[in-house]
Structure formats: structure tokens, C-alpha cells
Length: 123
Image 1 (cartoon, rainbow, N blue to C red):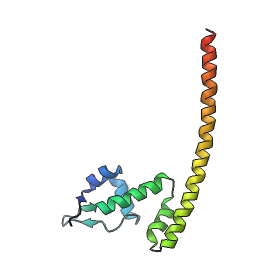
Image 2 (image 1 turned 45 degrees about the vertical axis):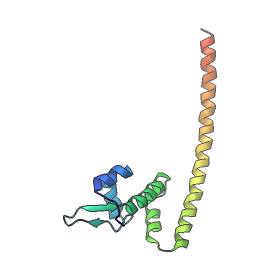
Image 3 (image 1 turned 30 degrees about the vertical axis):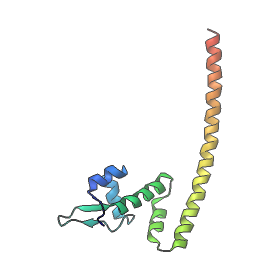
Image 4 (image 1 turned 135 degrees about the horizontal axis):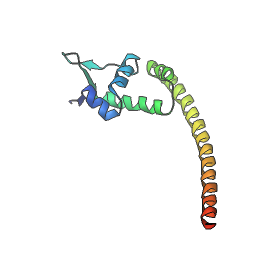
């Protein structure tokens, strides 16, 4: 079975990352086993793109690079599970804080809507 392959530019386009970010992920050990053509160009596969999706998800949810490196560097399922479990708990705490902040913002929007209606009715 032939796997699809992608140039760095195609991989960047498909993942939404920059070429610099792809190189950074390789340099820091977050993305490994990227083969090169005889001309030295990187070749990405669907497996790489899938792994990049995981990395992007972890970064988007605020996981520090050093924790992602620990996650990637561990071959033990228990260690990876512990890292992801701790991160999940942190994401839930952050979501709760964001919900509380959104409630404050919604309250302010409601108050200013009422004020704007009052101002408009007094004109």
C-alpha cells in the first residue's frame, strides 16, 4: 500500500503551520522519522500529519513544549497517560475559568444593552 507523501510546503498548508514551525518540531524532537529525498528535501506522510494534529491540539490547549517533549519522549503508555491526564485536568480548569469570565462579559453586555435602550428611549 502506497502512503501519500507531502512536500514541506504541502504539509505546512495541510496543517496550517509554517515551514519554520515544522522545522522547529523536528529540531526539538516533537516530530521524528521525517525522511529526505536524495536531494535532501523533507518528505512528510499521512502519519506525520496525524501526529502534527496531536501536537497542534496539545499546543492549542496550552501544553508547554517541555511537557509535549516529555510526552513524545516516553514510550510508556502509563507515563503518556499521566501527562495527558494532568493536562486534561488543567484544560478543564481553564475552561471553567473561561466560562466564568464569559459570564461576566455577558453580564456587562446585558447591562450595556439595557443602558443603550434607556438612552435611546430618552432621546
